[in-house]
Image (spheres, helix red, strand yellow):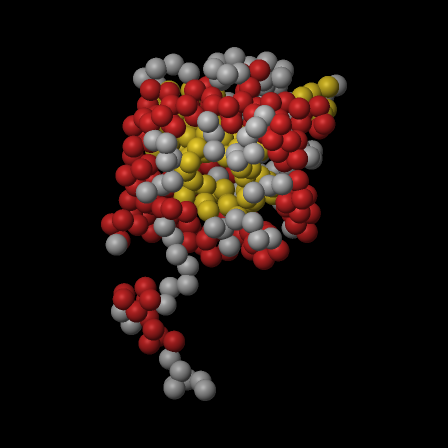
Length: 326
Ligand code: PBG
């Protein structure tokens, strides 16, 4: 059977019909909102390359928790900007560190908010690298002990889930062991399993003051050209006990999201990163793109590629637009 008997336009006739045959859903319950927390009080500083995203102090977080609850966004990913940086990044695992304070404040404001924490060294070290350094080299195995201590201290502060993002080999296993030894068997791990060495992290590094002081991240983050290697990365993290996987960035890697989704049964997240956000914001500000339309189209595309969950700076706007469209 073919045209003219078959007419695909029939099912596109009305909004009701289009909604009934829609294959991909997009809802605020699938969003994870990244938050940047800084020391001080009354701080709410817009990040210049990320309009609408702020570096905020602890006293702003209760209001943030309330607005996320109103919008139906279930989870946050916390990034800390410390006051003091040193070679090991000691504030990263300090009981009164910025992230530890933020976790306590958010959980007190709304116990139902799922609080995830980014576990990496780059924001906390004076050299800006994701691991301990000796003779200009990033040490893998020595770094694992630090990552275990960081994850444990986040769990002690009340984090529900920790998310190692530093692409060290063995990071998931080391963190699982540290959490279990500390009695936090129920704290889960979302692994940034497949993270590429990407130019799209630029605005984030401005926000988190985490640009490397020398060199780059190509000895641990993945080469953008590779996808079979992505499956090996994911497999390793599954074997080490990851509860959920992530692919990052999202847009230049939609095929990677699909491949990981088809191979593994763990829930899969995708990170719609800072540079992807900045591109849409810049074009919208110039009147070149219709922001709400392209944001919802972009997030739908990431879902269609296979992401169950999306980390996105658009989360709050998108939740509002989805509500308006109801
Ligand atoms: C590392 C980390 C980075 C991002 C999330 N976790 C930066 C990097 O790897 O350089 C980037 C997120 C974004 O660009 O939105 N702690």
